[in-house]
Length: 194
Image 1 (spheres, one colour):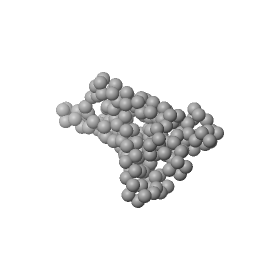
Image 2 (cartoon, helix red, strand yellow):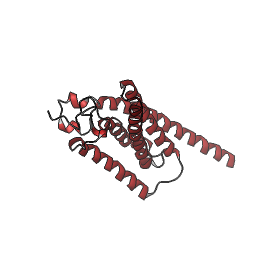
Image 3 (cartoon, one colour):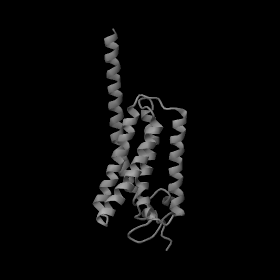
Image 4 (cartoon, one colour):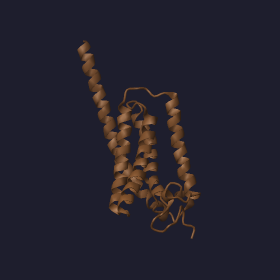
């Protein structure tokens, strides 16, 4: 009887993990699609200032971080309703996944352009794709862990996500003049006011 319970428990766990993995793959595909759309929505909107808060307004690295951040955040909210019963540490996992994704973009872009002296469109696209995959993969691995999250860790993860959200909105309109925010094709920081 004990053996049957153990086999049943392992089977249920395998099914849950498989479902979670399938959902994560779908999330990755949707994030890549949404991120690609967000590259163009500001221009398509006629340079609408509201749309600017979550769309790329220029070709800076900062603005391209929005292409990973917003789709991953939106999909984390949507995905929660599908996986809340089978995922552990959900808020923390998704926050860490988002943070790793945007950190990967910054580190990869500035490393390769620092080494070769210029950027290449295809490498930039590849970095974007890899960043989403890595971020969601890390979130998936953390959601599979058995340890239970605490109220403090959920609050900290939520505060970090809200902080990042505020930074993306504020820095769109009040852009610091540092290389992270500089459009290397035009030299503009933030929204082009001309």
